[in-house]
Length: 73
Image (tube, rainbow, N blue to C red; front, side):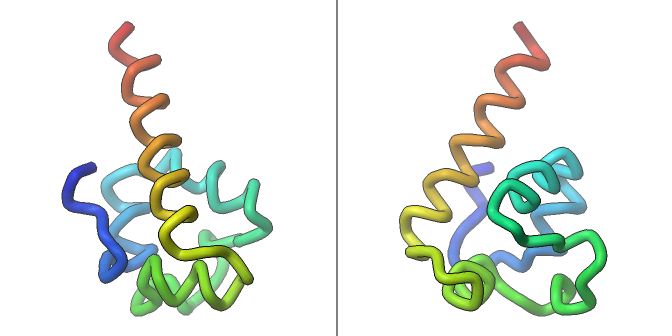
């Protein structure tokens, strides 16, 4: 998860963390059906959907972290 940054593509996130689709859906971002996921970065996606990129990245990392904790605990 530390490797996720503003330049990470949506597709890279979903390949490594398929459950993150729930996070994107909660933001009205249906990345599983959008062809842009192949090249759209976290930064671009956040801006395109009206989210603050820094806050969006922080929330995404938090979502992934919580999911990983619940899996192991």
